[in-house]
Amino acid sequence: MLLAGVLASSTLVMTVGAQSPAPTGQPGHADAKRYQPDRFAGRAGKYYELVWGVDSLAVKWTESGEVVRFTYRVLDADKAKTLNDKKAEPFLIDPRAQVKLVVPSLEKVGQLRQSSTPQAGKSYWMAFSNKGRLVKRGDRVSVVIGRFRADGLVVD
Image 1 (tube, rainbow, N blue to C red):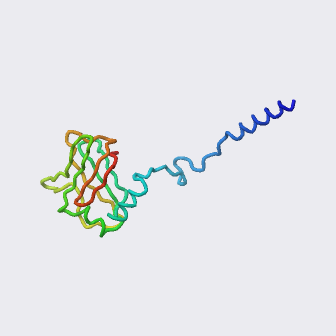
Image 2 (image 1 turned 30 degrees about the horizontal axis):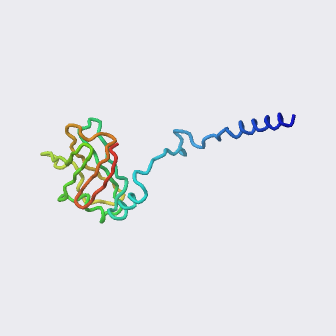
Image 3 (image 1 turned 90 degrees about the vertical axis):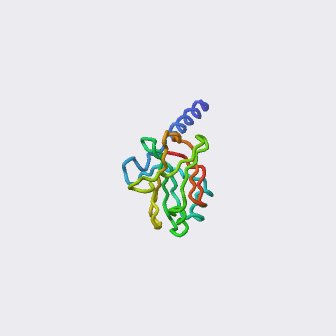
């Protein structure tokens, strides 16, 4: 009898304990937060912030696949000058595909990159020609602009 009572009460406790609390935020509400993974391990993100004055580095494959876009946000305009320097030729290197992409220069538009004086808090971009779609989503690439080098960026 005692054994039956212990088993019944433990089953009730396990059933009640297994229920999870209701979520605090629901999709579409202001208090709901979407998980955004950190793109870099702690040290790498801090390195780009402290040495180069930038964060939010991202590489995106456009819908057509003919262009790969590199974006970044400037935190410190003085440190980030190298990235916007017109004299520094940018490259996107994909070791898997064994290619080195360049920023194309169009006759009437010029280079497909922003090269104005950087301002803190603003985001900047450049577009690399991916003719033949050799660089694919999921590839790990490096972006090199003068002395600046960002390794291990994943193409989204």
